[in-house]
Length: 214
Image (cartoon, rainbow, N blue to C red; front, side, top):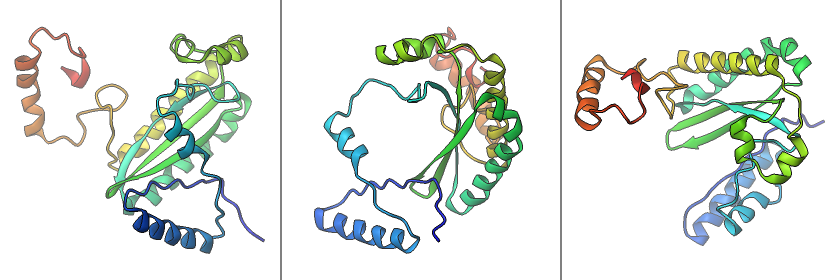
């Protein structure tokens, strides 16, 4: 009996046609060895046909809010970090249940590093930003969803715990200075140059005021 995991694998192969086909065939062989099955290549075909589409991902097809976080680690550390993140989410299962809050992971390979992105989903009213970015059909369908402030606070707290778990694994982050702390892990000598650079290039403090603690 097969044991299925709710994972899908998407590969981007940049090479000559012959080399790409060879890589694809080898990937298919390895996937099949683990009872994996091919799925239709809808995502790359749609993306290639219309790469600059309106943003719709801020609202799920079920009308849920979406709150992601992320961390980058060396490939050898990814499995242990993923397990630690699962532990955090498992511990919150009873607290999440009344809010119908679910989660998923996006895992992507970038060179020698792996990005792990835990994502939280829960029913809630559309925020002002989400309402502005959502498509008219989404606003029409989900615009009257009642607010879930308790669930929203829970999602924010869980996101903080997930980020703390990633930081404890010395994960790197994009978008540092706001959600992700900029100073931990940065050598003192490097941090000492920040005020001078800020003063030189932004003396009026008009670019991202307060970010990086400057």
